[in-house]
Length: 312
Image (spheres, one colour):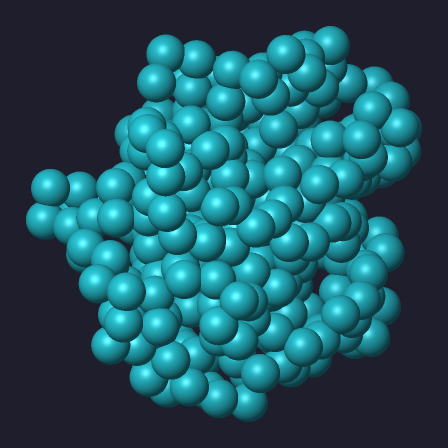
């Protein structure tokens, strides 16, 4: 799934989300007015919450002293994260990040980071947590603890008309499939039992690169989290470029997995603070509103649990 559809924006906004690049600082936004106003908080019609002093007290002293939580986000990765036409980070991860900061009464800095470097950025001390639709896997749990926030499968995109007649996951055997580098989809595809006709997995630096490979005919299919694939199919060329392979036996996507907020295992105080803040947002309904706002409510979790990916 998700781990890595949202409200469909105007053509202008979608184009901006896919082509704008940049890196935000402590203000977390390219919008000068927002940055000048102080902490990176929800604005406009974004979901908002209130601070809880008891949760703030759970934060590590070094985070309190620094005055912010630095968050690694791979942008663009719609609908999980993208830019609007004012270069402000929007989508599920940035909006939930601002809510967590608001609940914890701490500023958040949303820092653009290539997906394959988000874990090293924590290890180097450049970021504190990862919010980038990251799948919770046993391998990643060797380094991270996950506060899980979504659950679902991955989806397959093919060119419009489905020229290679891909109807289920096993039909990918013998075909070339493009995926984003360092995602769990590549691992799943390579592990498929295809006998003497394995999947040829083409890993590319960004999710957009993987989509482009499919459009250019360099791959037969593109695989991503279901919510991402649905968004791409709905918004690319007004929905005319790609088809989603819909398997009635897997309506929520193939191989459902948990995804969540990644935090270094040693940062136990921060893990506890983030977990309890997310639970507070679930209890009050703000978490569900962010899911609904981004059209991914089908992938909700009922409670803020850690490392649920261990037994999948």
